Amino acid sequence: MTHIAVIGAGQAGASLVAKLRSEGFEGDITLIGAEAVPPYQRPPLSKAYLLGDMTLERLFLRPQSFYDENNIALRLSTQVTAIDTSAKTIAIGDELLSYDQLALTTGSVPRKLPASAGGALGGVYTVRDLADVDAMAPHVTEGGRVLVVGGGYIGLEAAAVCAKKGMHVTLVEMADRILQRVAAPETSDYFRALHTAHGVDIREGVGLDGLIGENHVTGARLSDGAELACDMVIVGVGIAPSTALAEAAGLTLDNGIATDAQGRTSAPDVWAAGDCASFPYRGHRIRLESVPNAIDQAEIIARNMLDAGVEYVAKPWFWSDQYDIKLQIAGLNTGYDRVVVRDGGTARSHWYYAGDTLLAVDAMNDPRGYMVGKRMIEAGRSPDPALVADASVDAKALMA
Image (cartoon, rainbow, N blue to C red; front, side):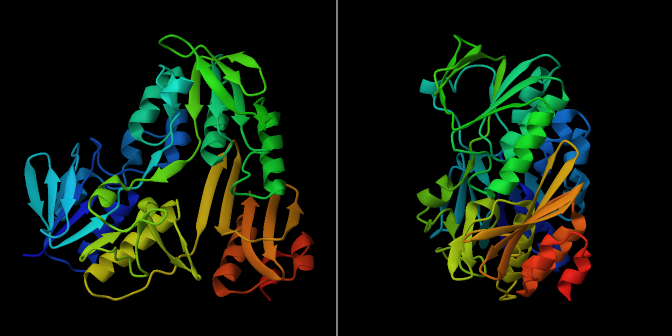
């Protein structure tokens, strides 16, 4: 009987195996995960779960019973040590597991502070998996002092939770502004003002020279010469695709595990999906770090494993929750030359254009603007910027 193995029990891996069964695959399926718990949602880790508003069981994508009932062998706390694409085997310690088809959904790993900068001290955390958040959660308490390193979305979400918990929060961003890599100055300005209003001390254009402490962090030295005291540090300086297994197996890498439009890697019968995979998109090669991409790409690959022959057409969208603001992002803003602001008071959105072509939308508490922008981007249509800027024009009218 055909055996499909999936390495990586995150959102992509869980979506892939579920899709295989819903598409009628009756062969053997093994889903291998390094963590001790079934596949779970990651976005709530730095928000609802860290706040204590979501239980562990609610994090799980599906209960253990789903895997049992669908005859999916879920191997947890399991480290794959090597892949032999010629012999079609996976090494798990001394055990060799044969496969007919293999999917890599290994996700990504957080970038950490080097030990020379104090990254090995106690009280220094990243926000990537359940163990990270479980370790830091007891220390996120009222009156504590936390330094957040990195002004991207993960850093800002962590800062928001800490501020809501009554901590004294300082956030440092080495670039000239927060969100510089991913958003326009208008969006940076919006979230800077939001965090400042909640008491967060944001320092832009300031890096971290090193942390202070013997065994546990007690402070930090900043690149501008300042020193500050802190009880804990949260590092949010980005993630990198988890490609070590693929590289050792000889797979082609290009900003992740390189796949074709259908999800195939350079090795026969080996596929990749999610944060770890790069794929063709509008004449370029991209890698998307998002839940929707992980789900959609994994489900396409599941179908292609069963010979559907379907190309993956990405529809990029993302979100972030900070305080009472829900940010929804549609499209990719790469190459924009102007931003049109639609200010409806409590609802606000920023529309990215390249010439007359709409590329992306950042919508803050503006679900209507987000949905209209998303539909138009996916349809290859662009609303008149003058109408976009006029908040008195109903968002749906922009599609006329």
